[in-house]
Image (cartoon, rainbow, N blue to C red; front, side):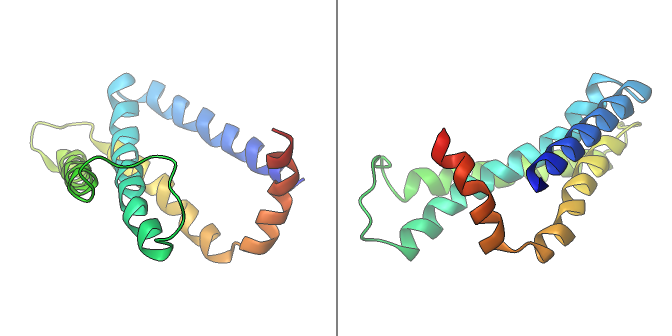
Length: 134
């Protein structure tokens, strides 16, 4: 049931964001609020490679990262710069409708209180049957 509610809520939020983009500067606003979140999650994926290899170094890996740790470190640096660039774009003097970046980061920040109250064991049990089927 929780999965259905979460999907419906995500759909409503997505529709509100599309309407927000249509009311403001259209495509540029939508790009503004997606870009920082996009680069943040790419950065988190790169960092997770280091974290997972540090936590469990003996697990066999199906893919070897060429030139590890140089390649993922370079990837993380580029993602961090692009994240910084997309956020600092909001404060440039020629950006008149740069509210999209603030909306995107605000939407992401709305999930933080939910993450704090999440119960990992229950959430994992709820998704196990879905994951086993497909």
